[in-house]
Image (cartoon, rainbow, N blue to C red; front, side, top):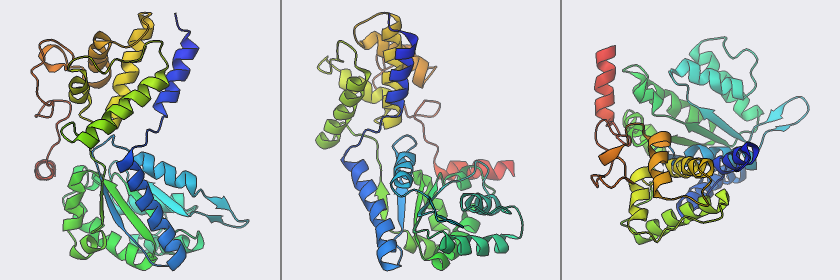
Length: 323
């Protein structure tokens, strides 16, 4: 029986694993280029980074902050990359306050929205900031008030123009609503980077999907590796994860835990079936479980299913009803 400490250490190690693949590497290259462009020219280069939850957007942000970390300069701090997670219940006020907190303003709550904006602009210059990353921008659509997309679009356009630093808006596809609310902002973020789920119908994407699964399996270091040659297994893995990196890790970790507790030498389909229900979708049993013999053989992306994505129009209508 594997010792609990070993299991926990493996779990933690794989959870922190950054599995790089070509689309991810290209996205990182472009964001790093935006930082270097501002550093070397004083001009800005903006991007809109789009991808479903779990495809690696936040990981990219963390990697950039790690490569260009804050440094103490005696009486001030250089913050080359300002990384901001949009508050869960966003307003321009609390977004501005979050930026001021990250920039080290001790009186971040004081002043009007205009005062806070002026302080942000001053601190961006004082902290030698070259790149602003704004993650989870869809919160302004999902949880903001009816006018939130238009208001934040106007505010961001003004801030970015005056700051003269590169900026990246990161979020789900429906972040488009914010860009559509201000034509000038949309022009500034016309460069788009996509982090898409892996697609089995594309040979290159299929190869990358298999490569990621194999890398996770190797990191788990079980005596018997997962046999990807089993009939139908690759498609079952794709149905179970929707080709999304975060779900791939969750599924494999869940199956690993089950296999270890059963003192098995490796992960099999039964482990994967149980892991899907326990780690990804509690209602994923029987015909709704890709590893079950009765699986109905379709993507689990319809309303009420684990990978369902509500359209932006539907979310906005829901907002209007609650206001």
